[in-house]
Image (cartoon, rainbow, N blue to C red; front, side):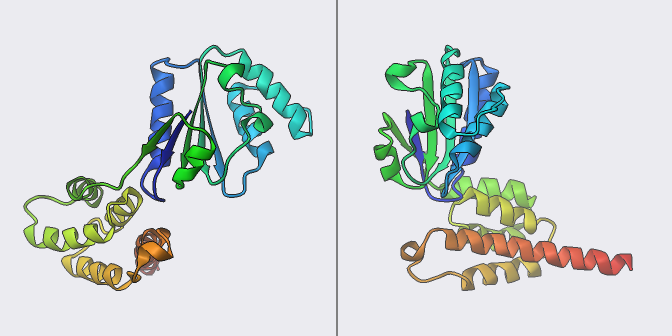
Length: 235
């Protein structure tokens, strides 16, 4: 079992989806299953998601019977990768119907979480920390999504300030970059001020999602403005 942990918006889900895609593409595993666990896990929903991928139909209404069916079905696969995304508390794999360890040596589990201690509670053999992007990595990603060119020196000066406010989080860099694509230098400067003024003191103590939400809100505001402009022109 491998635990991938890191703050919200750092790209854990994107990474494990790509891992799953490549694992299937290269036939590293016979089956690759992915299910989102979330803060309030629903065992039946997780079972349904896996059964759907396997072409398995449940007539049973109890989680126990469904778990038994899923368990038996997964045991037929020689090599199996199960990806559990967005885990907030320890998950009972047996309750879901996932055979691991001595029950199925060919079944590997990859989970994502924001909390390192979940990796320990789930007894992950490997714990992988997904860090935020370095400044150079962040700028490269931001430039691609914002459609910036090296020769736009004035615009790039402001854009770099905006990129820094995204604090290396891919979700913020991509969302804000796309929202500001083809915007004027003045609009970029307004966005830079909005992001800077929205910062909370001691943000790390309050919660890591604040800056991500700020970036997403900025993007949403720009989309609303664009939609308003489009409607005015169409009337």
